[in-house]
Length: 316
Image (cartoon, rainbow, N blue to C red):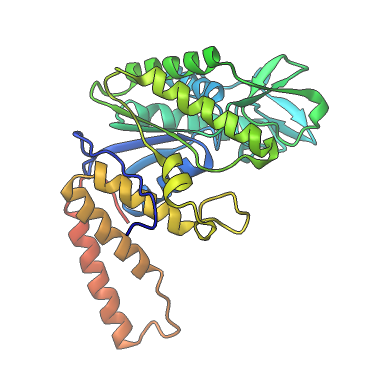
């Protein structure tokens, strides 16, 4: 007797190896997945523009990364005594213009360099809604808590989403390795502030357009992350207290399914051991001279050294 509808990720012919580089961009779910890649000691860069949600803004970010086009004073606005880029998350806002630009352009430079040697790109779309900043007639990635009267909110059209996806793919194919793979996902996080009906409309536009846009395209794939949470993990015990964001158990479940479909056997073993080491490193003691603790650290360092010999990049 079955008590749940399980959603599987189709086995990939291309596998992620221990030396592969993974670039991710998009919603907060992309960051949670990237954190797990990092814990597993894979090479990863996530969201050089901070958390962004809609396809138009993600395409803007990828284009700037592709062109290595630095931001200047003219690209910023001021609000509440802070200098702000409307293309970026609020984490880049500072009280000094040179600090904001340094943070933005350092991440842009890092992202550009990483993309040139990237093997996998994961794009997570969160919403079809977008805001236009009326004083500049500019579509933005984040409103930075600027009063609503300065913005006009609307749904991106099917044509706008399609163009954004195609242009993103073109930029990535141009800057990344020839064999680079792009994995598209739709975030399972509900945007309840838009309204529940509006959130479903927004997500459905993303899912439909992604499927249509990448149909028949080599190196482009869809990961059913949204479907796993909605249809497989639909119980509220898989959500955080806000009942909106997936909790750690749900994220780990999705990551495990992803790994089963996309990791090589060597990568699976490498990540599994690194997760155990990561947990062991969190162990604390009040007596650091305790012989048992010293023996524990000695064996842990030996395990770390054994892992280091498996890869060329720096770990731990």
